[in-house]
Amino acid sequence: MRLPEHPEYIANAHDDPAGEPPGWGLRAALALLAGTVVLGVSVMVAGTGQQAPPPQPGDARRTPGAAAAGGAAGAAAPLRPAVPTWVSIPAIDVEAPLMNVGLDPEGWVDAPPQEIANLAGWYQDGAAPGARGTAVIVGHVDNASGPAVFYGLGVLRPGDAVEVIREDGVAVRFTVYDVAVYDKDEVPPSVYHDTGQPELRVITCGGSFEQDSGYEDNVVVYARMTDAG
Image (cartoon, rainbow, N blue to C red):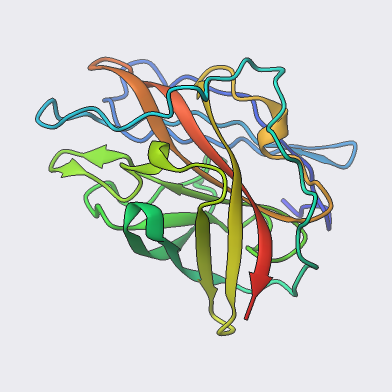
């Protein structure tokens, strides 16, 4: 499906199909409707029961209608799009390659292979990091072997840095302005909205884990582009 030049993302969570084993359940059904792309997300990762639960931001739970703090004020001017290849989050010691994730034959967004712990995915049919729009990077919180790339995401706080290296050699630096936790069935439209500025969302799982349904929450990091070089 051909997307509009500057799509607006709206999230509506979808439960995993009945009988699907607990694991990454990221789903993004896309529909072109009156110039708007509808992006539905549900994220779950299999827990092992052999390590402590992933850290969670204690004061970050949001209701579906609650807006993120800070908006896009102070964002740097957008760049031309380019494919991202690496993500760095110093505060939680993340240094990870990025793979492109797109749609599978059924129209859902693919996820990075769960067995590769230190790998994140960029949703290639959305905005490129640094370009106008809201870029989306996803990663597992854990897998059958233990913690994965975004295990520590809930530790981040406003002011922390996220850097994305692109194939054009540009390092795009984002500054976190909010960290939110949503019930995976109530991820709000504001997560994916195009603010008119270059923004980034980094998403993983969190909350309680149930063997038959996975994690109950999504951890969403909101960041704006503040520099590039």
